[in-house]
Length: 295
Image (cartoon, rainbow, N blue to C red; front, side, top):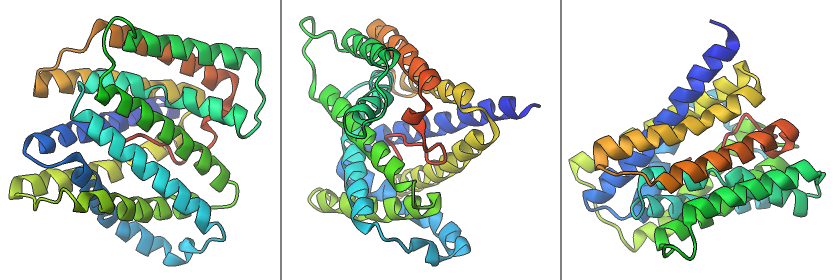
């Protein structure tokens, strides 16, 4: 098996695990737990799963001169995760997943406008194509845009901001430092809204939540290995298999039927992002830390 083939299989596995994590959010919410609390407990169990790794590499990795930026990124990412988990309880899994593909498009806009990266015509054309795909999914003027949809879009914008902050941090900080601060800060921030809706988990909820923490942590490792072994321009588009995973899990577990507009619009956004990847790798500069809404 070549490295690229192995990397593709690793990416397919990783996004499948992350989609299962999203499915668990819907399951636990159906058992009576609020998404605010689910977000906190997912982070809490995720930190517990990562503690052996932090102990192994040494807590000296936590030394930083950019604490303010780490805190800002942690707060932003916590907001994006809470919005994403909340959205998953309101809209079908595949529809939410298709819209979440807008993250690289929003990140590209931020990179051009805020970080002053080169704004070539092909890059703006790709962004325009991405927005066409988003409009196909939303169908404004034909259907009412629901609260869940707004939460997905809002969460995607915050993920894009988190991505840009990660990029600035990666210039001086190690991946371990970035992940460590994100894990701890997101856990603390997500606890605040969870307090107001707290409900002690049942035994069944506890095992599902424990599974979420394990899935997220293992998916991080698998995805990092995928980027290490394969070519980024080949591996990155494979992440769009997540839409297929989402449609399968949504249909089999929850009986959801994804709309044709979600497939069509998701496909157009995929095309937009693939062009962005091939024309400007700066959009996904920090490949060692791939950001998914559930992370």
